[in-house]
Amino acid sequence: EGFKSMIDKTIEELKEGDIYDAMGISETTEGMRHYARKIYEAQKKRRFRARSIFDEKGAYKASERKTSLHEMRILPKGWNTPALFTVYNSTVGIHLGKEENIISIVIQNKDIAQSFHTTFEAMWKIARKI
Image 1 (tube, rainbow, N blue to C red):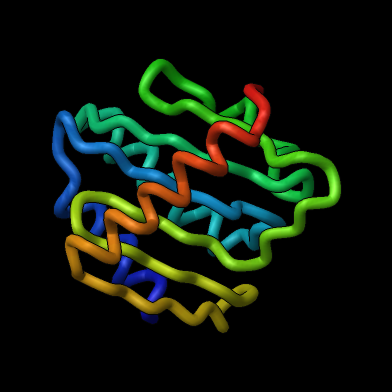
Image 2 (cartoon, helix red, strand yellow; image 1 turned 30 degrees about the vertical axis):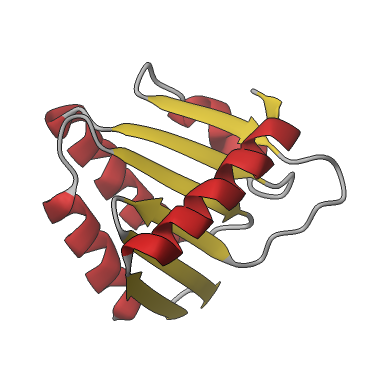
């Protein structure tokens, strides 16, 4: 329920000009892919940018999701990222789990979000373009 609520909140809040960063995308379940598709549909309507960093387990469908508004990269081979981190504006989401047992923690804090944005930028430089 927490993951679903976080995605719904994200979709409500993102607007044109915002950037949605997702880092640590690994093996996904059908439920997680369902919510990812909701974000992509909202992105088409609201025109916000997205950047995603996958590990090698999560990258198998990445190229299908690439659009002019969605940049993607893959971490070096052997880098495993079981937890997913999402960051936009002053909101950070930390997600871990499988199927319906996804634990989500949401943090609303400008300074913590800035720390995650900085970490995302460092990982973005390490990851290779798709």
